[in-house]
Image 1: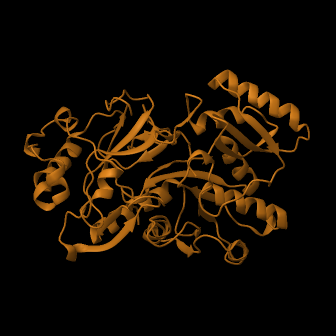
Image 2: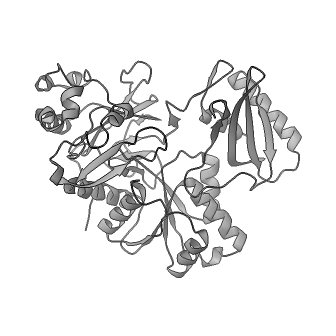
Image 3: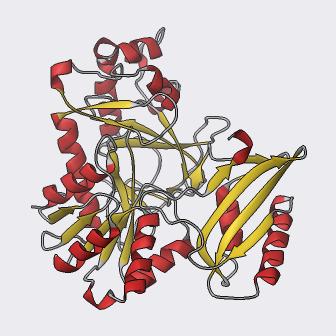
Length: 424
């Protein structure tokens, strides 16, 4: 069964097309009546006046703080008897965000996810080993529903128990691995350590839930000998499966018949031109249980102009470079983890794994960077060069420790790259 819905036009700009405007109009027409959350959110605003893209861009943003205030089921825009499932965001602090789903929402999500698998070249002949977590988190069950919708064999392992993961991978001859980049790397290292690469049948990896740099990407690609695909999504907007790169790897296609996507300047809130980096803002077009209007994701990316070599009608965004809210302020300087990662990538003597620790001692902030070596023994020289390069680019000198490969902790979920000890 072919699950790609071929659009009738090529959309390569952020201009809202007539179909999207109509779907947004349909959402807004009865939104206040269906949702106490939006009745309060849009108090004093006549949603019937939204006739154009310019009108739409005057509507206020929503964000995770708004959604937390709606706990537990205040986001629901349907009667309770139509809610068939709830999910919660994976954050561990603050009031949880609960997202209700109708049966149609679950079906729509499965269709989008199946598209992702198709774009990655997965077929019903594949065996898909699913390692992300199950439960309130959207990851594991999303990967499974999409796999079953496509018609491939799902191997729903969930996270952890690496011995059993590898045994099942060998016995069932899994051809696709779905994982966080951190766990994919852990599995790659274990396969090499155990000398079982000749018993592994993996061909593709569908990787999501955390940002990962090119050096880490290359390690996983090389050590597992597989094609890699970035999958995008977040619990508030269905879950993973709302976008993925194709074999040409020129950005992630996203499903603009389900989503309207804007890129804004995170400071001004104004839309930026195609090709410029900014924060992703998403509006759901047909979601029933918890429709979201102009939701600020805090993920940083850009619209990629032009057509993809694959010929897909679906537009593209770049890989997620970070988050607008993961900025660290050290000695009065604003620093993003990606800036540190870019410096580390300049040194072939270094591996992909690093950890940043920020502390406050004797009235001063300090940054310590631990990064694994790729094999060099001259740690002192490379430490000095890395510190000097960061100083030239960012403006202060960190303390750099180069450590042996495998020294830093590995994670079966997401790796914690930044530990701010000033507030612990």
